[in-house]
Image (cartoon, rainbow, N blue to C red):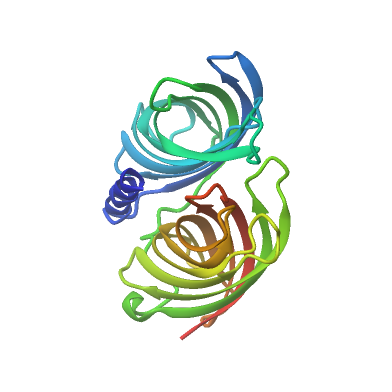
Length: 320
């Protein structure tokens, strides 16, 4: 997780530099596995922060579809050089960065294990062509991504078309509070967990989160998580994370967090054992009032015993 943490730190420096505009973009497209020449669907969600007219930083999530024997997705951080910014008409950009992937891989073996959860780092390179609509914050974008995992296997090339929106370029720190350093909240959440297996077992889940601002762009959370009673998971524990937070309107925040998830005794094929896992999260909060906020989170559990999971949570919190 070290490279992703460094990428988040670089983006934190960028967002703290001033009130540069921000961009949120959603994409859909086609992906090719270069080694096997298979094709499948792909999708990306990206947040970009301009540093100046020609330099930007971004965080992204990509789902790389379902080629044979692989269900891979991941999160990444990139630095960008742009031909121009925020002007009507066409502009172009090139980006490079690091991508941390999660791959559910089918095992063709006679043993009891049918799949494995692989994790690893890959460099990512991207090209973009953007058309900015006149007198509008909306834009259309075409993007080419190349991801090459270490070892040269399962490199992918994806072509995506997207629609994005440019926000005002507000300061971006915690505009909804008077003093970011004393912002605290307790949030109760519920949702659905999906085990990253070939069958994608599902289970109702719940969580309680304590959140505290430790800087104008950084939050710290402690979260108690119950992942329900799916036979593949049946796991609960406590997670702690650091979050890079950015306000995109006076009432709306988005953020990305990373940290550790400490599990109680869970079945793992070798009896009941306690485990430590990684937890990567993307989420948003909308401040309904000064005290009440709605929250939506996607969390990825990164296990060391092939029980990765996606945790989708919605909740309401109280700030004090």
